[in-house]
Amino acid sequence: MKKIVIINGHPNKDSFNFGIAKAYKEGALNAGAEVKEITIAELNFDPILHFGYQKRMELEPDLLKAREMIQWADHLVWIHPVWWGGLPALMKGFLDRLFLPGFAYQYRENSVWWDKLLKGKTAHIITTLDQPGWYYWLFYGKPSVNQLKKSTLEFCGVKPVKVTYIGIIRNSTDIQRTQWLQKVKELGRRLK
Image (cartoon, rainbow, N blue to C red; front, side, top):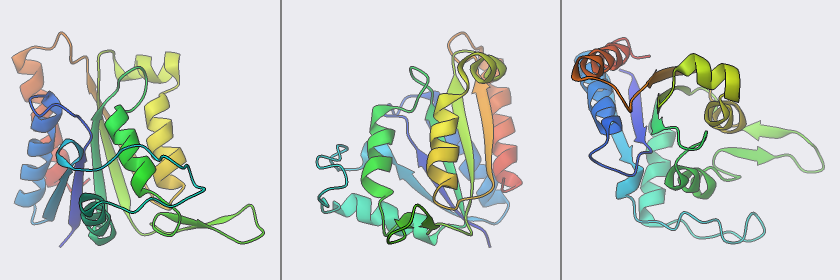
């Protein structure tokens, strides 16, 4: 049985991203997966890494629970909108506070290399845009995907990391949204 954690990075519970999370979960459950969810907007934590890496901040109970879920999972599904080319601030704060040395990676002493502590996990990023995915990739270089996929997940050993772009959200119709939700539900059913 595949163990999946869906991580929703949208701060607004009325957003389309919550419909996407629900659709993926439904598909995965229908395929027999075990699914847990982390809704970052519901967590009680300080998203600011006040001391950088010079001094360790204690993790709040919600972050400790999120860490346990990520350790438990085989597959991580990250759902978020693209704002100003990047991740929502709350999601970035979640990553800053949680993906720390000793949990996600560990630098080797007297070396430029590091150990990837999340090896063996896979991921799928599902991101919503107010522009076509090809435009975001071609003209902007897909900065949020580079940050989450390459600079965070792959840095920590998560591979492969697949990406699905959904949009243009801003002017979408109910028919388009229904089609996107069906597509995401199918991704969940295929455990991708």
